[in-house]
Image 1 (spheres, one colour):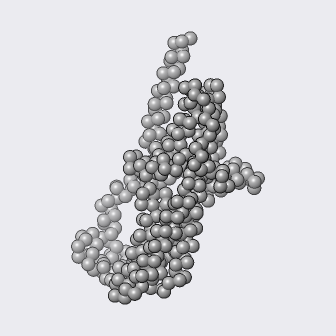
Image 2: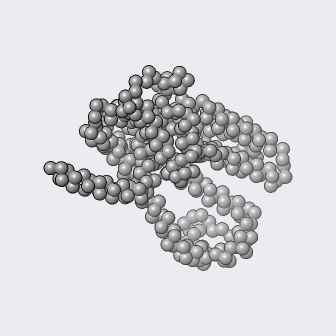
Amino acid sequence: MDEKRLVVALFGLAVAAVLGALAFQFVAPLTVSVFLYYSTRRYYKFLRRLRLPARARAVVVMASLALPLLLLVSYALVLLVVEAQQFVEQYALIDVASAHVDWLGDVETMPDLTFQGLYEAYQTGQLSPVVEFVGDHASLLTTLVSNFFLNLFITTIVTYYLLLDGHRIREWLLRFDDDAVLRTYLEAADEELEAVLFGNLLNVLAITLIAIAAFSGYNALVPAPARVPYPALAGALTGIASLIPVVGMKVVYVPLTGIAALPALLGGDTSTLAYVLGFLLVAVVVVDTIPDLLLRPILSGEETHVGLLMLAYTLGPVVLGFYGLFFAPILLVVGLTFATTALPRLLGADEPEGLHQDQLRLDDFR
């Protein structure tokens, strides 16, 4: 009997090792999937009030994430291309670039960004250098595009089925419970992950609304030459950029300040620079500093310390790369919850009476 158990155990370890190796190859999309699952689970549960079936609720949640993000990115790319074309044509940069960049060849003007304009440019051979450049680097471009869509597919599928079957994973784990230690730990970790990551999503939405209101209000009060372009788009990008550690929203509003100051610098009229400096002050204080001081403690979770959470968001990408932005806070919550719930019981310590009096709870602000 013991020999049979040993064989089964060895087989199970071998299967677990293979699955672990495969999962490690796709650790980034899997981590993002867990992050999205806990960020949207309360929304998924809220949709029960509409009496929608589980699959319909999961589709609504995924569409609510994907469609706005797709529209935002598409809108931003179109505006970026159009503005870049106008800027290049206004300052005749294409002539300077074609003299130094071989693959631009004899291109002297930018083609119209329409189907007819691109077709005519292709017929006249104006796009031949660009087509040749893309052909020479087709392998690299194909690899990048295919990897992106593969990771996107994995993230979508895993998040969808976690929303549908996450409770089954929890029930399977509870089959190995011993003296209710595992149940206590899993329930605490599950609730804290939901609180922290859902709070993160709320923080993004709040920053987005604050940034849109601040940028739009600034545009309404200043003369036209000092206005920032596309305040709604800039506000939405600022909210998304709040996920980035250390630099955060600065990757949006600092370049935006430079764009707003560019007409004054190129035109020689520096009278509007004071308004641009005012915009930078508004962005730093109203959009960046105040929400960071007020919202993060409120939306940091039930028990996870705000400072540790900020360190996780900061150090995770430095140590692990891009996916560390999502993996580090998950690992922090799982580790801290184990230290505060399961470990004391395993070591026979007394039950803690509660949190420190200065630690904020998410429930206190609902």
